[in-house]
Amino acid sequence: DAKTTQPPSMDCAEGRAANLPCNHSTISGNEYVYWYRQIHSQGPQYIIHGLKNNETNEMASLIITEDRKSSTLILPHATLRDTAVYYCIVRSYGGSQGNLIFGKGTKLSVKP
Amino acid sequence: EPEVTQTPSHQVTQMGQEVILRCVPISNHLYFYWYRQILGQKVEFLVSFYNNEISEKSEIFDDQFSVERPDGSNFTLKIRSTKLEDSAMYFCASGGAWVANNNEQFFGPGTRLTVL
Image (tube, rainbow over all chains, first blue to last red; front, side, top):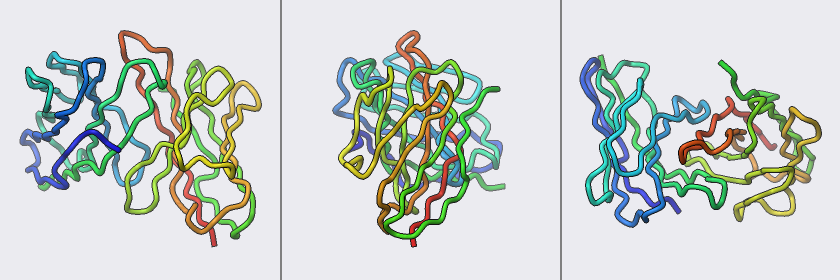
């Protein structure tokens, strides 16, 4: 089962920042937080990942709390094309070759 | 940009028939995966494949399922005797070597399997 908890849905106004929360209170020391998204039944797409430091790339920022029990994915300027289901996934390094265990995710609706 | 491709995009079959879903992973990748997503439900892991053998499989991946990498480019999922509940979108994914504790998985567009 997924080790994360996310709100089922969120709305965001176009051009505003979208902040998607995720709880992973049972995360262990060798586990990373990954974010993927799925746009309308397409294949999931990698967004970003982190261990304990905040991370930023061209798509998003990832803020991980100091105790690592929760994180927030930030899309700084959401567009209509960011409407998708966003999955927060806890994944260990090495071991089982890193299978992704998906939960139900958060359905983000970006509105004009 | 390299991408994972899957064929066919949609497969319709009769219950009890065998189907083979095909995937061409990204060329220098080492890790290969199959996932499925029943309509309206979450994406579920089926199997991972590395170094020409299965490295892990889920409870869903029973004896009816098999995977193969018949040549250097294709990665296939075979369902021997399809059941109605096998109707789903099947996603292939591939990943490169682990670098800096990261192994991003790249997903294909999926094959929608409909079992009648």
